[in-house]
Amino acid sequence: MSKGNAIIGAPQLSFAVYLVNALSAAWGMTSPKVYSLLKSSKALDDYIVPFYDVLHTCGEKYLVEDITGYLKERGYAVKADSYLAEDIVENEPELFS
View 1 (cartoon, rainbow, N blue to C red):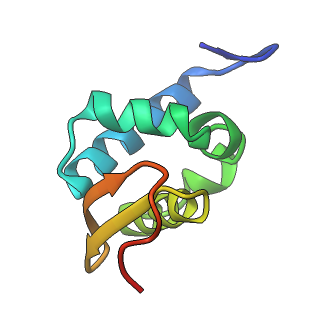
View 2: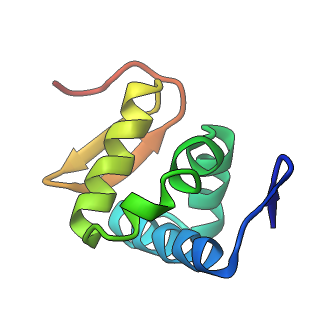
């Protein structure tokens, strides 16, 4: 797997798969839909992979909250109950305060 000219190693790929599955479970979405959202929002290429060294040391709950917040800051509204997202609506205004 590559990002631009950089080659993504097995640890980063394994972490990305783990994170997609964790987000899928937390958000109640299929893994392919989560992956598609992370790619289209550029979260995977601009945040998750480049900051692997820091992110892979964090717990699952923090990662779900962090990625959910990252998406919200970029215009992807998240309807959430506690830290678990129920639904993500791409490029819609935030649906709650």
